Image 1 (cartoon, one colour):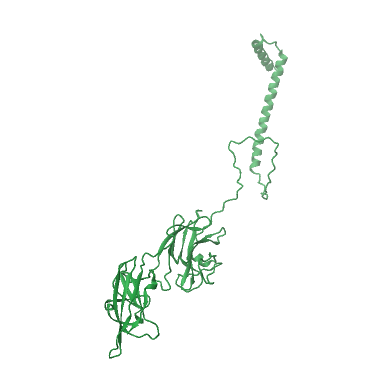
Image 2 (cartoon, rainbow, N blue to C red; image 1 turned 135 degrees about the vertical axis):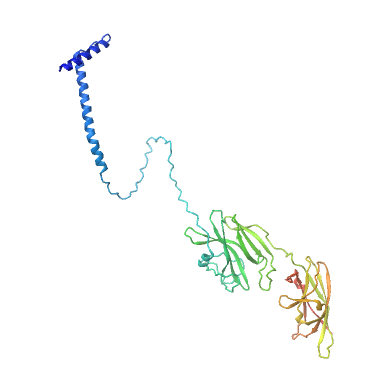
Amino acid sequence: MSEFDDILVSGEFAAFREAYAPAVHPAGTTAVRETVRRRRRRTAVVTAAAAVLAVAIPVGANAALHRSEPPPGPAQTVSPTPSDTSASPSPPSLSPTPSPSTASPTRPTPDGRITRSQLLAARIDLPAWSYYVPKTCTTAKVRLGPGAGTTRDPAPALLGEPGYGDLDGDRAVETVALVGCRSGEALVKQVVAFNRDAAGRITTIGPVVGTYDELGDITEFSVRADGTIRVRVADIQPCCGAAEWSPQRQWRTYAWTGERFTQTAGPTRFGVDPRLTDLTLTAGDLVIGPADTKGDRTATVTVTVVNKGPVDVPLLGFSDFYTIGEPAGGDLSRCRTVRADGPDACVLDGLPAGKRKTYTFTFRYDPPDVDEPPTLRVIHYDPQERWWNDLKSEDNQVELRTAG
């Protein structure tokens, strides 16, 4: 041991002895020297290890930075390992992971907006017609025609433009259309709702309303913001001799119940037309006078009209003159002629409800070519000279008995 070591050991031993001599029995110089040797060996080992690490770490890091990535392998599906029910349960997490849903993903609701051109191009299924129709009015895989209600095409036709709205409350739009099919001179009609399925095909939801005995016509419809459908209906269809202004018209509202469409607002029936009244015509004999020098004769008849109500008649008209002859005097001299439902009519005074009037008519008598009695008819006209039906039309016409 060097002189420096002896001095160091002697100094540390002296300090130790001075501090702990009163309580501890000294271990001697040999033990102190052994302690010093152990300290030196630990210092040398730590220093050598630090030097090795200083060289090894940069080399390893550099190799990792330049190492090429292995090529990706094929995707694999790992089957979950059944859990061991005997194992202790894991402690709950503070941020629980939501369990995957077992329900299938919700498909988006199909867009049921179908344009007029798309309806005309597709083959669609129609509900059964609610009234008698010919065989040409089919319902399965129908290709609708572009008819506007005036064509003579016997096949089903799309009338007007479709309407759109959320009919069933699913926040998606559906389509409503008016379709018709000719039956004789009239069109049988129905309002139908359409949608699309998940594949985009046009499907039929069902009929909203159709024509039948009491409901003779459907003229228009609209889809409201709340998904209800307003339909304008009429008691008769203006065809077959019926004037355009003659039908009663109403707005009725329909809504989807989840299974079908049902009426939710508006009148449910038409009832008696409040614009009509009951006129009654009676007549005396048609008196035929003697022939003049030219062989012409006149005929005179007296008629009485009663307005049984309930509506005042602004103008009374008389027609069927052609069965008697040309008007030649009497009250006919102050009439003005309008076109009625075919023959000319002579329009005279008004007649309030509950009142009656008597008129005398003179004609240049023209004996009929066939053996049929001449007739005369009374007609209800409004201020615009539009003619109206009668509540009891059978007593508006009389057969005239001839005399003379």
